[in-house]
Length: 162
Image (tube, rainbow, N blue to C red):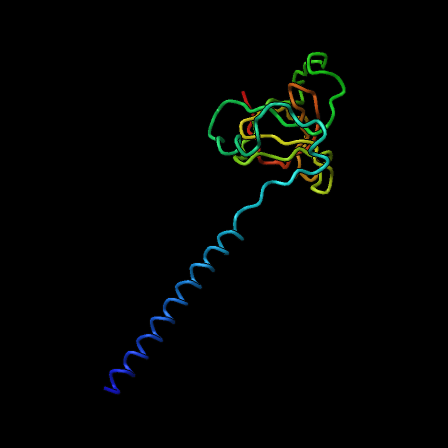
């Protein structure tokens, strides 16, 4: 009879340990899942100026990057004049029409360096006008056809159009 009592005690302790382990594992999994959720995209002060009024978000256009329709270009600078008053820019002999081939889009910068100010963003298949290349060949100077905004993007992420 003593052996049966010891057996019940050991079985009870093992069941209690199993329940504690399972409960701890469930709580740990829940906490880890909550902590690893991606935070929302921060909005910096320079991005709030000149924010487009449409409801198109960069995440939507990146998710639909295989879509061949051109998404509107998001420019963070205040335009000098309304788009209807800006001159339409046609490529000259040195300029060429191109499109963005980087699936996640591009950052439009004020100068040919990643240290310069971000002035906008371009999405996959957006059309641009190539104006030139930096001396080291790492950056391309571009102009946006609709607004005339000029900036720099990393070279090798465009494809010339015929």
